[in-house]
Image (cartoon, rainbow, N blue to C red):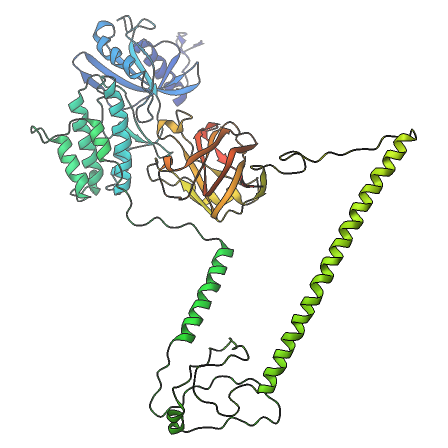
Length: 584
């Protein structure tokens, strides 16, 4: 203390509070007034207070001191018996496991004394990061595909709650959050009260808002007719006009199948080149065989002439009258690039000089053929005699070597080493079904029949068979469960070998061991999962060989992932290198 002018003590001035100190005092006051356990430290109040027939519910973003994570905590005032029904609903929601609804971590009725520690009624939910649906729709309506995806996933989560007898409630634009990973989540689960019909009506209002937008960017619902009609049915109160359940709404929101044929896999380069040569050859032959229409007064084409001697007279040109007198026109000459074999006579009745080969040349050809025939007749017996001599020498050498070995055994020397014939299927002969060479992969594509249409890193599929284990095709990252977040039974890659081949097994390399996989085969790439027969299965290690029990003949091989492994952001798997072995 210091003394003033009159000798009276004066109190020193206190420095102004820092914003951090004000925040801490506010937090401390909130913890005291709400009576929460020390485990939960409120950070910020979110959303307006919710007035209910039994009291008021406040929502906070809080820190769980034990698990060091953010949570959403809702406090019911007063506590005690007034909050019993709400806490019972929260305990029912705690048994749900769906990414569309915020998980319930903790719930308590409290003692009724809001000032005593643990005296407040509260429900602790998972904290969901992301953009709320209200914030998203302020910029205008959503695209059709996003509307179907968001509302279907949300309806599936609500339908799961209805199956256990829980009406969710609280389905508002501010509580629906678009997660960063493409999923959707509902905060504040469950609301203080709710009904099944109320959930259906609320989903219809959300659907209509997605089609129109909110705020300045809102417009009349002009989206697809089936979505507009579905929103109207969900909000209808007339008998026989509304929806019977949220599950029915989810099935109607399923994305319509794509029209048009499935794009074929890229063809094998060798097959394409060979097919191109065959097609070009057929085209040239068809062009050569096509009749040629001659204009009046035009000479017919003259076929190539077999080369003659220097003294051979040149062909004599004829007039159109000579052509008519000589007989029918000769066929056209073959196209450029294709030489006609010598000695082939075309149909025609003309025997003009210089048109055909000289008879002396034909006699020489016959003499050459006779000479070749005599050479073959003489050479074959000589070749047979040489084979007999070689066999006799080999047999004699074998007998002599055995005799020498027996003599050495009698004299006391080391016994001869005997050899037995190799049994069928033993060493020295590769049994059926043994892996042979690696089959060439002509192309591959993601196989996701149970997905929602979102790409599954399709552009990275070639990295799974590029010969480099350092590159890979990864799945998307899923939350909540290694079973693809309970969204689908699996995903995979189907490999095209270009043509049916005899296969013995598949080798898979990965940098994320632990995923479960099935190897399936089929003759088509666009069938249902059951159309692919299971040939092998197992758990992936860094390098895993999956041999087939029997040789399988197929063109398409499906590497079907059925279970994921824990990753930093959730659950995922990857295929670094896939090698398909042919049967030996």
